[in-house]
Image (tube, rainbow, N blue to C red; front, side):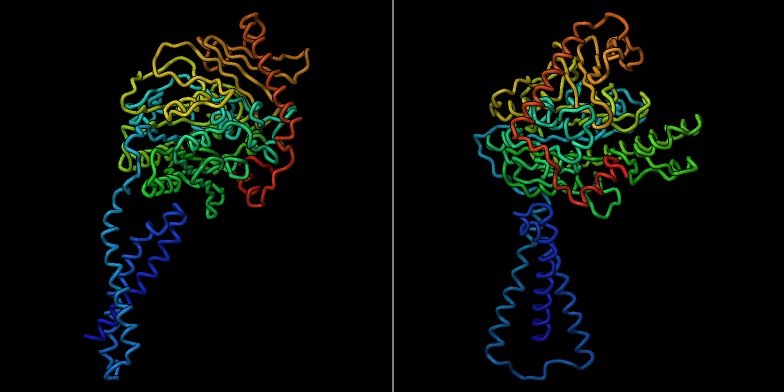
Length: 553
Protein backbone atom coordinates (compact mmCIF):
# COMPACT_ATOMS: atom_id res chain seq x y z
CA UNK A 1 0.00 0.00 0.00
CA UNK A 2 2.90 2.29 0.80
CA UNK A 3 4.14 1.83 -2.76
CA UNK A 4 0.75 2.82 -4.23
CA UNK A 5 0.45 5.83 -1.92
CA UNK A 6 3.85 7.10 -2.99
CA UNK A 7 3.07 6.53 -6.66
CA UNK A 8 -0.27 8.31 -6.32
CA UNK A 9 1.37 11.21 -4.54
CA UNK A 10 4.14 11.66 -7.09
CA UNK A 11 1.88 11.22 -10.11
CA UNK A 12 -0.72 13.63 -8.76
CA UNK A 13 1.95 16.23 -8.04
CA UNK A 14 3.56 15.94 -11.46
CA UNK A 15 0.15 16.01 -13.19
CA UNK A 16 -0.94 19.07 -11.24
CA UNK A 17 2.28 20.92 -12.08
CA UNK A 18 1.94 20.04 -15.75
CA UNK A 19 -1.69 21.13 -15.80
CA UNK A 20 -0.81 24.33 -13.98
CA UNK A 21 1.86 25.12 -16.56
CA UNK A 22 -0.55 24.54 -19.42
CA UNK A 23 -3.17 26.64 -17.68
CA UNK A 24 -0.76 29.50 -17.06
CA UNK A 25 0.30 29.51 -20.70
CA UNK A 26 -3.27 29.53 -21.91
CA UNK A 27 -4.45 31.91 -19.24
CA UNK A 28 -1.79 34.45 -20.06
CA UNK A 29 -3.41 34.85 -23.45
CA UNK A 30 -6.77 35.59 -21.88
CA UNK A 31 -5.92 37.91 -19.00
CA UNK A 32 -2.31 38.00 -17.78
CA UNK A 33 -3.02 39.29 -14.28
CA UNK A 34 -5.47 36.50 -13.53
CA UNK A 35 -3.64 33.65 -15.23
CA UNK A 36 -3.26 31.69 -11.99
CA UNK A 37 -7.01 31.69 -11.46
CA UNK A 38 -7.57 30.62 -15.03
CA UNK A 39 -5.09 27.74 -14.54
CA UNK A 40 -6.98 26.12 -11.65
CA UNK A 41 -9.08 23.84 -13.76
CA UNK A 42 -6.27 22.31 -15.89
CA UNK A 43 -4.20 21.90 -12.71
CA UNK A 44 -7.03 19.97 -11.07
CA UNK A 45 -7.50 17.83 -14.17
CA UNK A 46 -3.77 17.14 -14.27
CA UNK A 47 -3.84 16.14 -10.59
CA UNK A 48 -6.51 13.52 -11.21
CA UNK A 49 -4.99 12.19 -14.42
CA UNK A 50 -1.53 11.99 -12.86
CA UNK A 51 -2.82 10.13 -9.82
CA UNK A 52 -4.68 7.56 -11.91
CA UNK A 53 -1.79 6.98 -14.30
CA UNK A 54 0.72 6.61 -11.50
CA UNK A 55 -1.42 3.96 -9.72
CA UNK A 56 -1.68 2.03 -12.98
CA UNK A 57 2.07 2.30 -13.49
CA UNK A 58 2.79 1.10 -9.94
CA UNK A 59 0.44 -1.85 -10.43
CA UNK A 60 2.16 -2.74 -13.69
CA UNK A 61 5.57 -2.64 -12.06
CA UNK A 62 4.41 -4.83 -9.19
CA UNK A 63 3.15 -7.41 -11.66
CA UNK A 64 6.67 -7.63 -13.07
CA UNK A 65 8.08 -8.13 -9.59
CA UNK A 66 9.88 -4.83 -9.43
CA UNK A 67 9.57 -2.69 -6.37
CA UNK A 68 11.36 -1.13 -3.52
CA UNK A 69 13.39 -3.82 -1.71
CA UNK A 70 14.46 -1.58 1.10
CA UNK A 71 12.70 -2.29 4.41
CA UNK A 72 12.89 1.24 5.57
CA UNK A 73 13.82 4.66 4.34
CA UNK A 74 16.10 7.17 5.88
CA UNK A 75 14.44 9.94 7.85
CA UNK A 76 15.07 12.73 5.30
CA UNK A 77 13.34 10.71 2.63
CA UNK A 78 10.31 10.26 4.89
CA UNK A 79 10.17 13.97 5.58
CA UNK A 80 10.42 14.71 1.86
CA UNK A 81 7.71 12.16 1.18
CA UNK A 82 5.40 13.77 3.72
CA UNK A 83 5.94 17.21 2.19
CA UNK A 84 5.29 15.92 -1.29
CA UNK A 85 2.18 14.19 0.00
CA UNK A 86 0.81 17.46 1.33
CA UNK A 87 1.52 19.13 -2.00
CA UNK A 88 -0.10 16.29 -3.87
CA UNK A 89 -3.29 16.45 -1.83
CA UNK A 90 -3.52 20.25 -1.98
CA UNK A 91 -4.80 20.41 -5.60
CA UNK A 92 -7.96 18.61 -4.47
CA UNK A 93 -9.15 22.00 -3.29
CA UNK A 94 -8.94 23.17 -6.87
CA UNK A 95 -11.96 21.07 -7.70
CA UNK A 96 -14.09 23.48 -5.72
CA UNK A 97 -12.55 26.41 -7.57
CA UNK A 98 -13.04 24.61 -10.87
CA UNK A 99 -16.71 24.10 -10.05
CA UNK A 100 -17.04 27.76 -9.19
CA UNK A 101 -15.43 28.66 -12.51
CA UNK A 102 -18.40 27.25 -14.37
CA UNK A 103 -19.98 30.63 -13.84
CA UNK A 104 -18.42 34.09 -13.88
CA UNK A 105 -16.16 35.19 -11.10
CA UNK A 106 -17.88 37.51 -8.69
CA UNK A 107 -17.24 41.08 -9.78
CA UNK A 108 -16.08 43.75 -7.41
CA UNK A 109 -18.52 46.66 -7.67
CA UNK A 110 -19.16 49.52 -5.35
CA UNK A 111 -22.85 49.20 -4.38
CA UNK A 112 -23.18 52.96 -4.71
CA UNK A 113 -21.92 52.89 -8.31
CA UNK A 114 -24.99 52.19 -10.37
CA UNK A 115 -23.42 53.14 -13.67
CA UNK A 116 -23.91 50.58 -16.45
CA UNK A 117 -21.33 48.33 -18.01
CA UNK A 118 -20.75 49.47 -21.60
CA UNK A 119 -20.20 46.92 -24.36
CA UNK A 120 -19.36 48.13 -27.87
CA UNK A 121 -19.52 45.42 -30.55
CA UNK A 122 -18.37 46.39 -34.03
CA UNK A 123 -18.46 44.22 -37.14
CA UNK A 124 -16.10 45.38 -39.87
CA UNK A 125 -17.54 46.06 -43.34
CA UNK A 126 -21.10 45.03 -42.40
CA UNK A 127 -23.78 46.35 -44.74
CA UNK A 128 -27.08 47.30 -43.14
CA UNK A 129 -29.12 45.85 -45.99
CA UNK A 130 -27.93 42.30 -45.17
CA UNK A 131 -29.63 42.27 -41.76
CA UNK A 132 -33.15 40.95 -41.42
CA UNK A 133 -34.06 43.76 -39.03
CA UNK A 134 -33.17 46.20 -41.83
CA UNK A 135 -35.36 44.46 -44.39
CA UNK A 136 -33.30 41.56 -45.74
CA UNK A 137 -35.29 38.37 -46.35
CA UNK A 138 -32.23 36.09 -46.74
CA UNK A 139 -32.12 34.87 -43.15
CA UNK A 140 -28.43 35.72 -42.67
CA UNK A 141 -28.61 37.36 -39.24
CA UNK A 142 -30.98 35.58 -36.82
CA UNK A 143 -28.92 36.53 -33.76
CA UNK A 144 -28.60 40.20 -34.65
CA UNK A 145 -32.29 40.27 -35.51
CA UNK A 146 -33.13 38.78 -32.09
CA UNK A 147 -30.97 41.41 -30.39
CA UNK A 148 -32.77 44.11 -32.39
CA UNK A 149 -36.03 43.05 -30.76
CA UNK A 150 -34.83 44.44 -27.42
CA UNK A 151 -32.88 47.37 -28.85
CA UNK A 152 -33.40 50.66 -30.63
CA UNK A 153 -32.80 50.34 -34.37
CA UNK A 154 -31.39 53.39 -36.16
CA UNK A 155 -32.51 53.38 -39.77
CA UNK A 156 -30.24 56.19 -41.01
CA UNK A 157 -26.95 55.87 -39.11
CA UNK A 158 -23.85 57.12 -40.90
CA UNK A 159 -20.11 56.89 -40.35
CA UNK A 160 -17.65 59.78 -40.73
CA UNK A 161 -15.33 57.91 -43.11
CA UNK A 162 -15.51 54.90 -45.46
CA UNK A 163 -12.78 52.79 -43.86
CA UNK A 164 -11.60 51.58 -40.47
CA UNK A 165 -8.78 53.80 -39.22
CA UNK A 166 -10.34 57.18 -39.90
CA UNK A 167 -13.87 56.06 -39.06
CA UNK A 168 -13.02 54.77 -35.58
CA UNK A 169 -10.77 57.75 -34.89
CA UNK A 170 -13.73 60.07 -35.41
CA UNK A 171 -16.12 57.82 -33.48
CA UNK A 172 -13.83 57.74 -30.42
CA UNK A 173 -12.76 61.42 -30.55
CA UNK A 174 -15.94 63.11 -31.88
CA UNK A 175 -13.74 64.98 -34.37
CA UNK A 176 -13.37 64.70 -38.13
CA UNK A 177 -10.36 62.73 -39.41
CA UNK A 178 -8.68 66.04 -40.28
CA UNK A 179 -9.32 67.47 -36.81
CA UNK A 180 -7.89 64.43 -35.06
CA UNK A 181 -4.72 64.32 -37.12
CA UNK A 182 -5.64 61.52 -39.51
CA UNK A 183 -5.68 63.32 -42.81
CA UNK A 184 -2.65 64.62 -44.66
CA UNK A 185 -2.67 67.37 -47.24
CA UNK A 186 -2.91 65.89 -50.70
CA UNK A 187 -5.17 64.43 -53.33
CA UNK A 188 -4.25 60.76 -52.79
CA UNK A 189 -3.61 59.59 -49.25
CA UNK A 190 -3.22 55.81 -49.48
CA UNK A 191 0.55 55.60 -48.95
CA UNK A 192 0.40 58.12 -46.10
CA UNK A 193 -2.35 56.16 -44.36
CA UNK A 194 -0.44 52.88 -44.63
CA UNK A 195 3.00 54.18 -43.73
CA UNK A 196 2.40 57.09 -41.36
CA UNK A 197 -1.12 57.58 -40.03
CA UNK A 198 -1.55 57.08 -36.29
CA UNK A 199 -3.60 58.65 -33.52
CA UNK A 200 -1.90 61.68 -31.97
CA UNK A 201 -1.58 61.41 -28.20
CA UNK A 202 -3.12 64.83 -27.64
CA UNK A 203 -6.61 64.22 -29.01
CA UNK A 204 -9.41 63.37 -26.55
CA UNK A 205 -9.85 59.60 -26.69
CA UNK A 206 -12.93 57.82 -25.35
CA UNK A 207 -11.19 54.86 -23.58
CA UNK A 208 -8.93 57.26 -21.67
CA UNK A 209 -11.90 59.37 -20.66
CA UNK A 210 -13.82 56.34 -19.39
CA UNK A 211 -10.75 54.99 -17.62
CA UNK A 212 -10.27 58.34 -15.92
CA UNK A 213 -13.92 58.17 -14.84
CA UNK A 214 -13.41 54.90 -12.97
CA UNK A 215 -14.21 52.36 -15.67
CA UNK A 216 -12.17 49.22 -16.29
CA UNK A 217 -11.43 49.25 -20.02
CA UNK A 218 -10.73 46.30 -22.30
CA UNK A 219 -10.46 45.69 -26.05
CA UNK A 220 -10.52 42.40 -27.96
CA UNK A 221 -9.84 43.32 -31.59
CA UNK A 222 -8.56 42.06 -34.88
CA UNK A 223 -7.56 44.60 -37.52
CA UNK A 224 -4.01 45.72 -38.17
CA UNK A 225 -5.09 49.34 -38.60
CA UNK A 226 -6.21 49.25 -34.95
CA UNK A 227 -2.82 48.12 -33.66
CA UNK A 228 -1.22 49.54 -30.52
CA UNK A 229 1.62 51.11 -32.51
CA UNK A 230 -0.97 53.30 -34.23
CA UNK A 231 -2.13 54.62 -30.85
CA UNK A 232 -5.13 52.40 -30.19
CA UNK A 233 -3.89 50.95 -26.91
CA UNK A 234 -4.33 54.26 -25.10
CA UNK A 235 -6.64 54.14 -22.13
CA UNK A 236 -7.11 50.36 -22.07
CA UNK A 237 -6.36 48.25 -19.01
CA UNK A 238 -6.44 45.22 -21.29
CA UNK A 239 -5.76 45.56 -25.00
CA UNK A 240 -5.34 42.76 -27.50
CA UNK A 241 -5.34 43.11 -31.27
CA UNK A 242 -4.65 39.56 -32.31
CA UNK A 243 -3.66 38.31 -35.72
CA UNK A 244 -3.68 34.53 -35.95
CA UNK A 245 -0.33 33.42 -37.46
CA UNK A 246 -1.87 30.13 -38.58
CA UNK A 247 -4.18 31.91 -41.01
CA UNK A 248 -2.67 32.82 -44.34
CA UNK A 249 -4.85 35.91 -44.56
CA UNK A 250 -3.72 37.03 -41.10
CA UNK A 251 -7.21 37.55 -39.80
CA UNK A 252 -8.37 36.27 -36.46
CA UNK A 253 -11.76 34.68 -36.94
CA UNK A 254 -14.89 35.80 -35.14
CA UNK A 255 -14.83 32.52 -33.21
CA UNK A 256 -11.44 33.34 -31.67
CA UNK A 257 -12.37 36.94 -30.90
CA UNK A 258 -15.54 35.72 -29.19
CA UNK A 259 -13.69 33.19 -27.06
CA UNK A 260 -11.10 35.79 -26.08
CA UNK A 261 -13.77 38.31 -25.12
CA UNK A 262 -15.72 35.75 -23.08
CA UNK A 263 -12.52 34.72 -21.29
CA UNK A 264 -11.98 38.33 -20.28
CA UNK A 265 -15.58 38.60 -19.10
CA UNK A 266 -15.24 35.46 -16.96
CA UNK A 267 -12.02 36.65 -15.36
CA UNK A 268 -12.62 40.36 -15.01
CA UNK A 269 -13.54 41.21 -11.44
CA UNK A 270 -13.91 44.97 -11.71
CA UNK A 271 -17.07 46.86 -12.63
CA UNK A 272 -18.24 49.05 -14.19
CA UNK A 273 -16.34 48.23 -17.37
CA UNK A 274 -16.10 49.30 -21.00
CA UNK A 275 -15.47 46.40 -23.38
CA UNK A 276 -14.87 46.91 -27.11
CA UNK A 277 -15.13 43.78 -29.28
CA UNK A 278 -14.26 44.17 -32.97
CA UNK A 279 -14.83 41.41 -35.55
CA UNK A 280 -13.02 41.54 -38.88
CA UNK A 281 -15.46 39.18 -40.58
CA UNK A 282 -16.98 39.96 -43.11
CA UNK A 283 -13.95 41.83 -44.46
CA UNK A 284 -12.26 40.65 -47.66
CA UNK A 285 -11.13 38.07 -48.55
CA UNK A 286 -14.53 36.41 -48.25
CA UNK A 287 -13.77 32.92 -46.98
CA UNK A 288 -16.05 32.11 -44.05
CA UNK A 289 -15.01 28.70 -42.66
CA UNK A 290 -18.52 27.28 -42.77
CA UNK A 291 -19.38 28.39 -46.32
CA UNK A 292 -21.38 25.50 -47.86
CA UNK A 293 -19.34 23.40 -50.27
CA UNK A 294 -22.18 23.42 -52.78
CA UNK A 295 -21.99 27.20 -52.93
CA UNK A 296 -18.30 27.13 -53.84
CA UNK A 297 -18.92 24.35 -56.34
CA UNK A 298 -21.54 26.47 -58.06
CA UNK A 299 -18.70 28.43 -59.66
CA UNK A 300 -16.16 26.68 -61.84
CA UNK A 301 -13.26 28.82 -60.71
CA UNK A 302 -12.42 30.00 -57.19
CA UNK A 303 -11.70 33.65 -57.95
CA UNK A 304 -9.87 35.79 -55.40
CA UNK A 305 -12.30 38.06 -53.57
CA UNK A 306 -9.83 40.92 -53.38
CA UNK A 307 -10.02 44.49 -54.63
CA UNK A 308 -6.78 44.14 -56.58
CA UNK A 309 -8.14 41.19 -58.59
CA UNK A 310 -11.28 43.15 -59.46
CA UNK A 311 -9.50 46.29 -60.59
CA UNK A 312 -6.59 44.57 -62.34
CA UNK A 313 -8.33 41.57 -63.86
CA UNK A 314 -12.04 40.91 -63.33
CA UNK A 315 -13.23 44.32 -64.45
CA UNK A 316 -11.91 43.42 -67.90
CA UNK A 317 -13.78 40.10 -68.09
CA UNK A 318 -16.44 39.59 -70.76
CA UNK A 319 -19.83 40.81 -69.58
CA UNK A 320 -21.22 37.39 -68.62
CA UNK A 321 -18.05 36.34 -66.76
CA UNK A 322 -17.90 39.65 -64.97
CA UNK A 323 -21.52 39.27 -63.90
CA UNK A 324 -20.75 35.83 -62.46
CA UNK A 325 -17.76 37.19 -60.58
CA UNK A 326 -19.97 39.83 -59.01
CA UNK A 327 -22.53 37.20 -58.09
CA UNK A 328 -19.75 35.04 -56.63
CA UNK A 329 -18.43 37.85 -54.41
CA UNK A 330 -21.89 38.79 -53.18
CA UNK A 331 -22.69 35.18 -52.31
CA UNK A 332 -19.46 34.68 -50.37
CA UNK A 333 -19.89 38.02 -48.60
CA UNK A 334 -23.33 36.90 -47.45
CA UNK A 335 -21.79 33.78 -45.90
CA UNK A 336 -19.28 35.98 -44.07
CA UNK A 337 -22.20 37.96 -42.65
CA UNK A 338 -23.90 34.74 -41.56
CA UNK A 339 -20.70 33.56 -39.84
CA UNK A 340 -20.15 36.89 -38.04
CA UNK A 341 -23.77 36.88 -36.87
CA UNK A 342 -23.43 33.41 -35.35
CA UNK A 343 -20.43 34.31 -33.23
CA UNK A 344 -21.84 37.68 -32.26
CA UNK A 345 -24.83 35.77 -30.98
CA UNK A 346 -22.61 33.44 -28.94
CA UNK A 347 -20.85 36.42 -27.43
CA UNK A 348 -24.19 37.97 -26.45
CA UNK A 349 -25.23 34.69 -24.81
CA UNK A 350 -22.02 34.65 -22.78
CA UNK A 351 -22.44 38.32 -21.88
CA UNK A 352 -25.91 37.66 -20.48
CA UNK A 353 -24.52 34.88 -18.29
CA UNK A 354 -21.52 36.87 -17.10
CA UNK A 355 -23.04 40.19 -16.01
CA UNK A 356 -26.27 41.93 -15.15
CA UNK A 357 -27.42 42.28 -18.74
CA UNK A 358 -30.30 44.58 -17.83
CA UNK A 359 -27.84 47.12 -16.47
CA UNK A 360 -25.68 47.05 -19.62
CA UNK A 361 -25.49 49.56 -22.43
CA UNK A 362 -24.83 47.35 -25.46
CA UNK A 363 -24.16 48.86 -28.89
CA UNK A 364 -23.74 46.90 -32.13
CA UNK A 365 -22.55 48.80 -35.19
CA UNK A 366 -20.10 48.75 -38.08
CA UNK A 367 -17.22 51.08 -38.91
CA UNK A 368 -18.31 51.22 -42.57
CA UNK A 369 -20.28 49.26 -45.12
CA UNK A 370 -19.06 47.44 -48.22
CA UNK A 371 -19.06 48.22 -51.93
CA UNK A 372 -20.47 45.25 -53.80
CA UNK A 373 -20.36 46.83 -57.27
CA UNK A 374 -23.32 49.15 -56.54
CA UNK A 375 -21.38 51.94 -58.25
CA UNK A 376 -18.88 49.71 -60.07
CA UNK A 377 -16.54 49.67 -57.06
CA UNK A 378 -15.49 46.80 -54.81
CA UNK A 379 -14.59 46.54 -51.12
CA UNK A 380 -14.52 49.96 -49.37
CA UNK A 381 -12.56 53.19 -49.06
CA UNK A 382 -13.05 54.21 -52.71
CA UNK A 383 -16.29 56.20 -52.54
CA UNK A 384 -18.70 58.01 -50.23
CA UNK A 385 -21.92 56.42 -51.46
CA UNK A 386 -24.73 55.04 -49.34
CA UNK A 387 -23.46 51.47 -49.35
CA UNK A 388 -20.29 52.41 -47.44
CA UNK A 389 -21.47 55.29 -45.24
CA UNK A 390 -24.77 53.91 -43.96
CA UNK A 391 -24.28 51.21 -41.33
CA UNK A 392 -26.41 49.17 -38.94
CA UNK A 393 -26.73 50.63 -35.44
CA UNK A 394 -28.55 48.78 -32.66
CA UNK A 395 -28.54 50.00 -29.04
CA UNK A 396 -29.86 48.17 -25.99
CA UNK A 397 -30.24 50.77 -23.30
CA UNK A 398 -29.78 50.09 -19.56
CA UNK A 399 -32.90 49.38 -17.55
CA UNK A 400 -34.78 52.52 -16.62
CA UNK A 401 -34.00 54.49 -19.77
CA UNK A 402 -37.01 54.93 -22.02
CA UNK A 403 -36.35 54.57 -25.75
CA UNK A 404 -38.30 53.94 -28.94
CA UNK A 405 -37.84 50.76 -30.95
CA UNK A 406 -36.97 52.70 -34.09
CA UNK A 407 -35.30 56.02 -34.87
CA UNK A 408 -35.57 57.05 -38.53
CA UNK A 409 -33.92 60.48 -38.58
CA UNK A 410 -30.29 60.87 -39.63
CA UNK A 411 -27.72 60.22 -36.90
CA UNK A 412 -23.94 60.10 -37.00
CA UNK A 413 -21.79 57.58 -35.17
CA UNK A 414 -19.68 60.46 -33.85
CA UNK A 415 -22.51 60.81 -31.32
CA UNK A 416 -21.63 57.43 -29.81
CA UNK A 417 -18.74 58.76 -27.71
CA UNK A 418 -21.01 61.33 -26.04
CA UNK A 419 -23.62 58.61 -25.51
CA UNK A 420 -21.05 56.46 -23.69
CA UNK A 421 -19.73 59.40 -21.65
CA UNK A 422 -23.23 60.40 -20.56
CA UNK A 423 -24.01 56.83 -19.48
CA UNK A 424 -20.74 56.73 -17.52
CA UNK A 425 -21.41 60.16 -16.01
CA UNK A 426 -18.08 61.38 -17.38
CA UNK A 427 -17.96 64.96 -18.70
CA UNK A 428 -16.82 65.47 -22.31
CA UNK A 429 -13.51 67.10 -23.05
CA UNK A 430 -13.27 70.69 -24.19
CA UNK A 431 -14.26 70.95 -27.82
CA UNK A 432 -16.27 67.72 -27.93
CA UNK A 433 -19.48 69.17 -29.35
CA UNK A 434 -21.30 66.14 -30.77
CA UNK A 435 -24.60 65.43 -29.03
CA UNK A 436 -25.52 62.02 -27.67
CA UNK A 437 -27.63 59.80 -29.89
CA UNK A 438 -31.37 60.31 -29.57
CA UNK A 439 -33.54 57.65 -27.96
CA UNK A 440 -36.78 58.94 -29.46
CA UNK A 441 -38.26 58.92 -32.95
CA UNK A 442 -39.06 62.15 -34.74
CA UNK A 443 -36.14 64.42 -33.92
CA UNK A 444 -34.27 66.64 -36.34
CA UNK A 445 -31.93 65.13 -38.92
CA UNK A 446 -28.26 65.56 -38.07
CA UNK A 447 -25.81 66.73 -40.73
CA UNK A 448 -23.15 64.09 -41.40
CA UNK A 449 -19.83 65.19 -42.86
CA UNK A 450 -17.53 62.43 -44.18
CA UNK A 451 -14.01 62.41 -45.62
CA UNK A 452 -10.81 60.39 -45.82
CA UNK A 453 -10.80 58.04 -48.82
CA UNK A 454 -8.24 55.26 -48.57
CA UNK A 455 -8.04 54.76 -52.34
CA UNK A 456 -8.04 57.26 -55.19
CA UNK A 457 -8.57 61.02 -55.25
CA UNK A 458 -9.88 62.49 -52.00
CA UNK A 459 -13.53 63.51 -51.79
CA UNK A 460 -15.84 64.79 -49.05
CA UNK A 461 -19.59 64.47 -48.54
CA UNK A 462 -22.44 66.01 -46.59
CA UNK A 463 -25.72 64.29 -45.79
CA UNK A 464 -28.82 66.24 -44.74
CA UNK A 465 -32.41 65.19 -44.43
CA UNK A 466 -33.10 65.98 -48.07
CA UNK A 467 -29.82 65.73 -49.96
CA UNK A 468 -26.51 63.96 -50.26
CA UNK A 469 -23.73 66.03 -51.84
CA UNK A 470 -20.31 64.65 -52.75
CA UNK A 471 -17.54 67.17 -53.38
CA UNK A 472 -14.45 66.59 -55.57
CA UNK A 473 -12.12 69.36 -54.36
CA UNK A 474 -9.19 68.29 -56.52
CA UNK A 475 -11.00 68.38 -59.85
CA UNK A 476 -10.35 71.30 -62.16
CA UNK A 477 -12.94 74.05 -62.26
CA UNK A 478 -14.19 73.11 -65.72
CA UNK A 479 -14.90 69.55 -64.63
CA UNK A 480 -17.88 68.33 -62.63
CA UNK A 481 -17.00 69.02 -59.00
CA UNK A 482 -20.19 67.86 -57.25
CA UNK A 483 -22.60 64.96 -57.17
CA UNK A 484 -26.06 65.68 -55.79
CA UNK A 485 -28.69 63.09 -54.84
CA UNK A 486 -32.24 63.41 -53.55
CA UNK A 487 -32.30 61.27 -50.39
CA UNK A 488 -36.09 61.21 -50.18
CA UNK A 489 -36.59 59.67 -53.63
CA UNK A 490 -33.18 58.25 -54.62
CA UNK A 491 -31.47 56.53 -51.68
CA UNK A 492 -29.63 54.25 -54.14
CA UNK A 493 -27.97 57.39 -55.57
CA UNK A 494 -28.60 56.67 -59.24
CA UNK A 495 -29.69 60.08 -60.50
CA UNK A 496 -27.12 62.84 -60.16
CA UNK A 497 -28.78 66.27 -59.90
CA UNK A 498 -25.59 68.30 -60.05
CA UNK A 499 -26.64 69.84 -63.37
CA UNK A 500 -29.55 71.53 -61.58
CA UNK A 501 -29.64 74.22 -58.91
CA UNK A 502 -30.89 71.79 -56.27
CA UNK A 503 -29.03 71.68 -52.97
CA UNK A 504 -27.10 74.88 -53.69
CA UNK A 505 -26.95 75.73 -49.98
CA UNK A 506 -25.76 72.23 -49.11
CA UNK A 507 -22.99 72.50 -51.71
CA UNK A 508 -21.78 75.77 -50.21
CA UNK A 509 -21.92 74.29 -46.73
CA UNK A 510 -19.87 71.26 -47.84
CA UNK A 511 -17.20 73.47 -49.42
CA UNK A 512 -16.93 75.38 -46.13
CA UNK A 513 -16.58 72.16 -44.12
CA UNK A 514 -13.99 70.82 -46.54
CA UNK A 515 -11.91 73.98 -46.34
CA UNK A 516 -12.13 73.91 -42.53
CA UNK A 517 -10.96 70.29 -42.55
CA UNK A 518 -8.02 71.15 -44.79
CA UNK A 519 -7.09 73.99 -42.45
CA UNK A 520 -7.17 71.57 -39.51
CA UNK A 521 -4.89 69.20 -41.40
CA UNK A 522 -2.45 72.07 -42.04
CA UNK A 523 -2.42 72.93 -38.33
CA UNK A 524 -1.57 69.35 -37.41
CA UNK A 525 1.20 69.27 -39.97
CA UNK A 526 2.63 72.59 -38.79
CA UNK A 527 2.36 71.81 -35.07
CA UNK A 528 4.74 68.89 -35.15
CA UNK A 529 2.49 66.99 -32.72
CA UNK A 530 1.50 64.58 -35.43
CA UNK A 531 4.63 62.96 -36.82
CA UNK A 532 4.28 62.67 -40.61
CA UNK A 533 7.16 60.22 -40.78
CA UNK A 534 6.81 56.57 -41.62
CA UNK A 535 5.63 54.12 -39.00
CA UNK A 536 8.05 51.41 -38.04
CA UNK A 537 5.97 48.70 -39.68
CA UNK A 538 7.30 45.20 -39.24
CA UNK A 539 7.59 42.79 -42.13
CA UNK A 540 4.83 40.77 -40.51
CA UNK A 541 2.63 43.87 -40.39
CA UNK A 542 3.13 44.53 -44.09
CA UNK A 543 2.27 40.91 -44.87
CA UNK A 544 -0.96 41.32 -42.93
CA UNK A 545 -1.89 44.51 -44.77
CA UNK A 546 -1.09 42.87 -48.10
CA UNK A 547 -3.20 39.80 -47.28
CA UNK A 548 -6.17 42.03 -46.42
CA UNK A 549 -5.83 43.96 -49.69
CA UNK A 550 -4.43 47.23 -48.30
CA UNK A 551 -0.97 46.90 -49.85
CA UNK A 552 -0.36 45.85 -53.45
CA UNK A 553 2.47 43.87 -54.98
